[in-house]
Amino acid sequence: AAVPSIALRTGRTMPQVGLGTWKAGPGVVAKAVETALKLGYRHLDCACDYGNEQEVGKGIKAAIDSGVCKREDIFVTSKLWNTFHKKEHVRPACERTLTDLGLDYVDLYLIHFPIALKYVPFETRYPPEWFHDLTAPEPKMVVDPTPVSETWAAMEALVDAGLVKDIGVSNFGCQLVADLMSYARIPPAVNQIELHPYLTQEFLVRFCKDLDIVVTGYSPLGAGSYVSIGGAKEDETVLKNPVVTDIAQKHSKSAAQVCLRWAVQRGYTIVPKSSNEDRLAENLSVFDFELTEAEMATLSGLNKNRRYNDPGYFCEGAFKQFYPIH
Figure: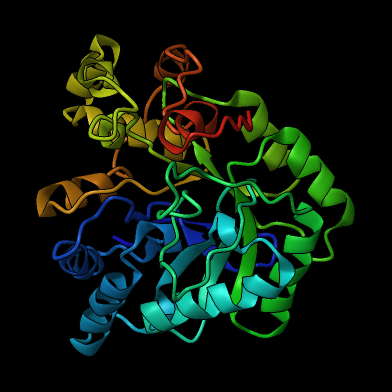
């Protein structure tokens, strides 16, 4: 069965479940993308910073070449990295992503973080990641203050040029969104933020809805991807929470499916990541059951404002520069 879609303000539609590609390593991601498309995924979430857009492109090409889908059937998102916020760098960064993905356009292009870092040329390092100069005695992240308005005008120019269909933001809080809405000629179509039962972000989700901005929830299964990079402990997983496992048992579904169903019933899009064929199928299979109002409330009640992807911690911890955004 086709995955339901959510309409963006421009009238284009975005499938409610997509494939996340963060931390999908070399040798794995092309196959995962091709498999996902065969299973019925029609939404792929990519980024310059994930360092695997060429492989994602191979997966897309393989699926198209074998007749699984056409380019226009797939909703592809990518993201502008922090080092490319100055107006003159936005288009080259987008064009590099398009080249790597092997596409003429992306369906959605997001500002990845409201963090502007000093430019790193492609030939020096790509993707540039967080450190500025790896040859420095003590490498660190170097902030290069740039107004969001400057970056946004260059994002709007990408729409005008036909390189991207829609533009949006990621990791933006209420005040930044409100400020952006005050001057945007093309308002953001999407805000992609961390969302799971331990971080429900009720106000931000509601505020975006009021402004007709579609929300995408990343890390919808919580801690998983962060354990290997020290951002979470193994025992923090929401998937082992008895509240979740009890509800899963009642519906004869997995704990992951319950978390994903909770998310889609809240009315936004999600991008769970997996490269395992069974899990890919499982993550898509969340439209054949419904959680009761009481179950929804119980799951939302697990909120503890636990943010795994928090620059306030990792910028200082890993990249030697304190830079909170929340």
